[in-house]
Length: 171
Image: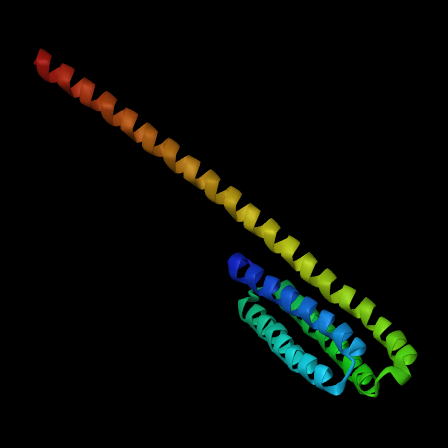
């Protein structure tokens, strides 16, 4: 995603935000008092899921090298594992509090998958920040070199002008 650091960082931020919202909604669903509350939570989860998938799709477009493509594949795979696990738990959650112990235990299995996802997002964010810093340093170095060259050219022009003036005065 080098060269696309800012758009990729935005996509990663959107992914992180939507994934955190989704995770919160998982726990809202588990603790919901009735089916209406569960339905409302599931609709919110669908919106968050769409945002996660849109962010991953955006990152796929920006992935310019094999490492970036591999990272995006890992993000997609980890999100899919999280989603699959939630689908297993959701049916139990819909049954209500009589199965609370079993689905809370199952929901706890979501946690390591979520940590994997957020770890990948954080790792990607750190890599993009590093790449952006390197590009900035290179740009600043090139800018300084250009400024030095302009100053040298100006001094040479000034010296040439003084020399030419002196030669015309004497001649």
